[in-house]
Length: 410
Image 1: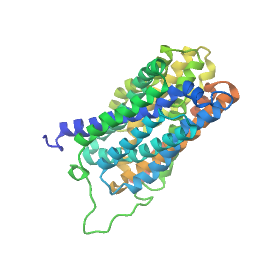
Image 2: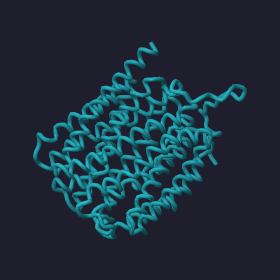
Image 3: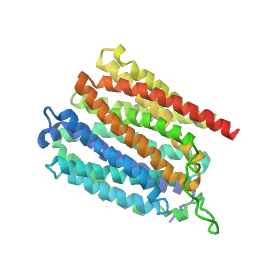
Image 4: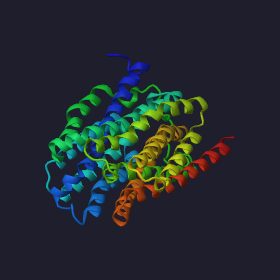
């Protein structure tokens, strides 16, 4: 067996396993968005209650996700992250398979809440792996591999693959396949490839002779951490407000059948494409806060421009550029920024709190916001515009964070 601390082994065993794991995790998150039309008919909410019930079924995942991100990072900070991710993956995969067996909205909601809860426990462990297994100079790339490419590749490929599977075999088979992949492939892969935290080459453990460090706001970067949380709320609203509804949004502007799957996937392919040059710029300049701010600001302006174009193709172009550029600029950098300002023992809790409140809480609000605005205005684009305005505020918050942090360390 190769040395787990060697560079190649770290990238393949740790980075590669977590990359594939997050890829499948995002298939499990988004399968409901693809399956929604027929599932709503079979479970009896395709009529007047569609907007309210669909919003609830899509966002119940994020409620569990928010809660367990926050408590998960704290409760698991003294546990081996390898064990946590394997158990979480097994439980949520079973819940995903069970959705395919149900005819009850209540059971669907319970299973989706459980999916979110287990993925909430899972998410902070990725930052623990990145901090313990990769050097500071490697962390932007490591975060991109662990938390970025798997996520956006799943969304890009997933919508293109899951849509024809759904069209051909129905929504139940879709859940059997996505849940089964986790049980049959991912859990054994992680069991074989991930290593215990005690073997990590860059683990910064507290001294055995001293008191156990306390989890405080100061350990998570001080009051400026609250600015990070606000920024992450707005980006969580942007990401989930679009991602939860994009299959139906692109259908509403004229894309159907195979073109619907392709149109749903295009923004996420753009995120992958833009990530390479933006990562190079970030690494070359070291201006991670500035690059992340630019991504949010540009995305907001593009979404606010949606009323200026009439054709479905042009609207999709604006959405694609907004989501792709924001994701490439913001997502890999924000975790490197966090990991550089948070004390080692607080990495898991701080990651969970920020992702739970930001992605879980912000995403839940955005899921309802877009669904309800479509019900009120007849257009998903009105909700996307509101998300654009909010993410501009998030850019300003992160800009202030950067200035305060620079002044504090000067």
